[in-house]
Amino acid sequence: GAVVSQHPSRVICKSGTSVKIECRSLDFQATTMFWYRQFPKQSLMLMATSNEGSKATYEQGVEKDKFLINHASLTLSTLTVTSAHPEDSSFYICSARRQGNNEQFFGPGTRLTVL
Amino acid sequence: EDQVTQSPEALRLQEGESSSLNCSYTVSGLRGLFWYRQDPGKGPEFLFTLYSAGEEKEKERLKATLTKKESFLHITAPKPEDSATYLCAVTGNQFYFGTGTSLTVIP
Image (cartoon, rainbow over all chains, first blue to last red; front, side, top):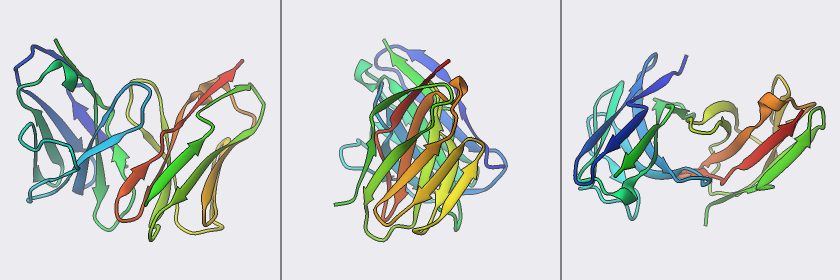
């Protein structure tokens, strides 16, 4: 149990385009989902926390208009990187947490490369 | 200020050479300490959750322990396939990750 998937696993896009990344909890209902980014040889940096049916809470320094998060159901959250630029190239990882549980289960990550 | 520190940053072991990884934390109202394994280019894989001092969890060659200030991940007789980055995270008011220990096990 506790499987989280992400799609796509890799995406390459041109500067100025928008990219959507999906995060799904496959065998449980995730009341809370988290989005992280990770630069090479660094740890995970929390970008935002989203609760199903409500607006996401963004960490300091993360532009909410650039990184749009939607958590429309208990099994799906999406992150849209709008008007992507090369500095947005990174490894984006989502995680999901069950209600009443502290453990986070992570997706396999999405490698975004902006040319 | 809540903080998580892992040491060493990198560790090279010979196959079969047991060792321990450290995770030191200062957090208000600890609600859980978590160990994850991360392979290159992949998301973290959940290993253990520890909730209170004195608690221990084991899985194959790995054993995690917890005190009021730190946690250890003991690796007994490691194999090359144990090579990965091991991440520690704690939950207080927020979820904090350490920077990880990169483990390399040499055949």
